Picture 1 (cartoon, rainbow, N blue to C red):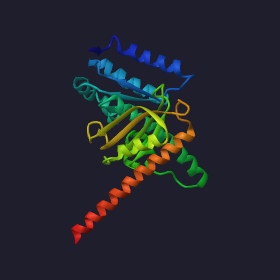
Picture 2: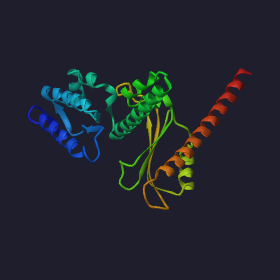
Picture 3: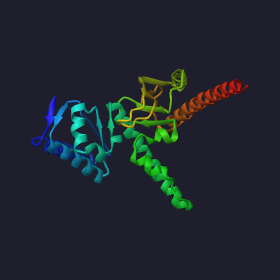
Picture 4: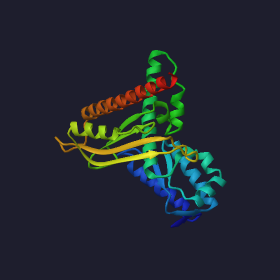
Length: 258
């Protein structure tokens, strides 16, 4: 492990700024995830530098998320009011959670911008939930319940497909697998993560499925038409399972009342 202290904290900031500048012309940075596992301790100077890093990047339109912060480091950051200043919703127990949250936050920003454009054209006021969704990267799961998303940037060999459900739905993964098979998609990675409520990092109970897929016909990442088709079929599966669950619940409630 290593430490963040007065001698290297500013260097870390300069390195991050250099990375962002190098990528600016090719792929402008919107999010930075700092995996803090190697950092075993920080001093008061590093605490202020971390806060300065986040504020500087936010002024550039870049959000910073922290993953796997150790207990000792977290305690120092809390004592320095850094967690409160940055927002505890930007601290995650795993890198996967941080990346997923950033992707959801990015999607919320785009949806929010679309809502603002639509409200301006129709004369209606944008929903209050838009600003809340932009503040909390995980709030979309609470607002929309279930969500399907895609990214071509996370894996060089395929399209990453995210399916987030507000709660666990038994046997639904088999139905997802059938959809992927029927659409002749090659799956190179499949992962399911069950999230439990954690007040410390504001995670939302639910389950997330992550797939890395590519088209068997082209051996390439999915094009827009394939993504739309896949999203439609996955949504149909979710709706079917939700409706079946609701019907079962209603029937059970009726029996109890009788």
